[in-house]
Image (tube, rainbow over all chains, first blue to last red; front, side, top):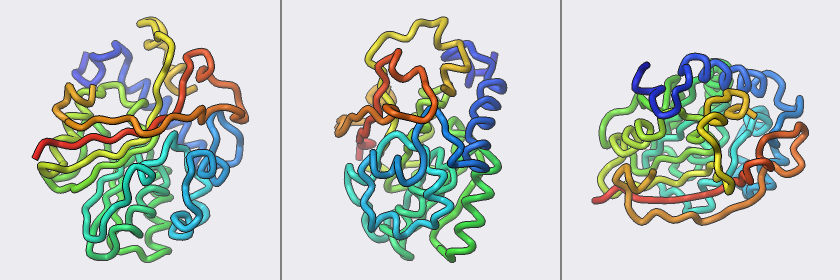
Length: 204
Length: 44
């Protein structure tokens, strides 16, 4: 068993493929109807401001599948460097890029090829120079040590099978004094070990 | 988990039933799952 699967005992490749399958579908058919809300309806639920969404291409907004609102915690400052973990099609990366401006930089990271391709195409079309999208895993963030002022994420860390590794990586890429602003989920009822091993519960 | 990873000033700032009314049923209600926002800081 690899270290990355040891927290749950799940087959890491199988879990990741199940998650990719779910979000590949969102990238291709965002309005299909899932066990979570998507797009502008979801953005309203999690209290995104209309002016933030003005900075985001509509096809990117349509793929929004987060669970919270990293920007309601605190605004990002001009010139800051930001990493967006599990960025999907890039809604939060685009908002972050608009807040940090051209003197800042944003790196969006996602493991799903279709999401990353969609994000890069939208970035190229919009001409946002301070925005970069990379493909990879939260347990091995392709960003240099101490690069980021802020790490944001929205609905992705709960899908990460080895959260200790992911938080270790977040700490590594942050500057001393750097902050995390994260949207995620919390469960109020106990989840049994057997339930944690059911992949369909991770994705649904 | 966040504090165990060496972060400080951890705070949950918001909670909401973000899965309520989703197009497909999910396990969210069974486990009392809600959306949250939280923040923390790497020590300087």
